[in-house]
Image (cartoon, rainbow, N blue to C red):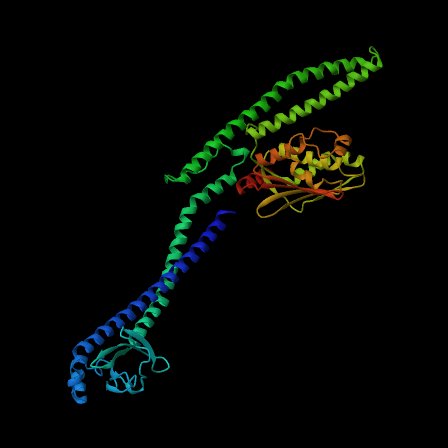
Length: 481
């Protein structure tokens, strides 16, 4: 999982969290306000019912109906305040009922009498119209042998109006808050992951050819800075170990060259006397065999020495521009005899010049090694095709044969040193398994890559990708030509 996908997933999780938190907060705010408004209205109505009971109901027997009406109108003015007040007997007779309110949003005469009020305060909700309700609070008061029911009510349209306004505010405000929070969170996450992306991009570029490069360390004082420092320390240890291994290979190869050269000289001098008949035939055959093995060992040492120098960056790589297509043609022409011995046809598909910068001699060695392998593992009468072309600002060299191919399980190992594909190849061909290792080392030293595709029994395709020469080097090449 790369940093970009992590960033997207974090944004998605953060967005979901912000949405759920915002919706939860809005729902909690709405429910809290609704409950608070209802509680306040109920508390207000309850206090007023108690006032009616204490101030009016205690003197109910002394009031005439008109006097009772005037008393309640003068003290409470229910019609002016859009309130409902009713005093009734337990037998269902009404002693007083307020008139219609100013806004005419309910008819007091149509509100039914209570059925289950007790001495304790009780409340109920009456539906007035399709969308309006009346909150009623009241209780029964025993007095002078009678049970009087005192009720007071108020429409809840003001509460509903306040709640509707709150919903509109939430519907407008919460999306804005969510957008701002998500945008700010995305920016913060991007800034937080930027050092990680920088470390990842740098680490992706570090190979054995540039182990001395280090990861950037952000002076943040957090775990990320500590991780970068730890990884740099690991790279330093790897660099040291790799340099020591490379120096050992180079030094060992260099030290072996001298005794091998002496051995070959001595054996060649002995071989020159063998033809004069001075030694028995059996001894001459043994000496010839030893000379062949010495030459093979010399080739292995030379190959190891070349790889060690390339890996260590000690080999001098030229930076002259040359035509890769022309180099392929000249190299193939020189090795044409090897192909003709097996009746193998070599085709070259290079429609135009492709300029690369580097060491032509070493890249020629790449072509030689690849062509030698193709000839070895292609049956008589086969075809080998070289293609040189441009692709996405890169120089591509592709070698395709219709030989015996390579098993899929062995493809990941073919660039390893001394790796031989299978026992059949080992028995029927010569070599130490260093050819493709040298090819890869030379390509990496030129900033390129080498890839192999193969199907057993069908053939193999080797693709070399190299950077193009810049325009200045191409102009110098054309001027010299």
